[in-house]
Image (cartoon, rainbow, N blue to C red; front, side, top):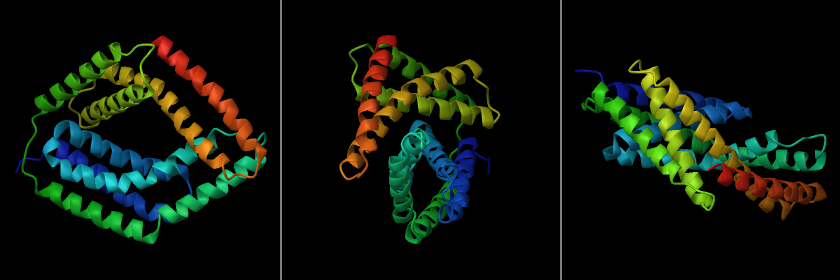
Length: 249
């Protein structure tokens, strides 16, 4: 039976995620959860783009991925805070982050995720569909062009939801182009660089928004005045960044 390039890549990503699960239970390294999430996100993006008929697999992966959203957002927020300038806030956020890790990455979560990933890998190995290299390349290029077309229609009055949707589109383009490169099909150097730039541009805005939301919620129970001080500064910075991003568009 002919090996399918897409299925081979998907299995590799899911095995990578599965292999990281034991580490998640015993480490507080932000990079581990990040690598775990990227492997799942790559898989979900490629399934949506190339194999929409396998929507059930993508939906199952979502149930594993979604609980880790807050963990990653807290890690990104902590990395952006000066612990010397905001010592009390940083300490309380760190404690909150550690508690979230414990309540999310439980033994039950690890066991279930390992079982689910194993089942999905087994299901993928049974698939006898073969996607032609030509189709894989053509579809990625077409999706990249579609993202660029959507980007060209964005203007200064565009809403945050539109920008967020566009960021996700460019992230999917990036994963598709990286898949083509890593699988030895083609290296779309300019397209890949372009997609990364657009993703980072729009990602900075989304990260700022997410951090602001976490701070707003955290300040309601935080005992340190540093929280509200930082929140107000971040709110001004976010509005400025939003305005600049819209103007650039």
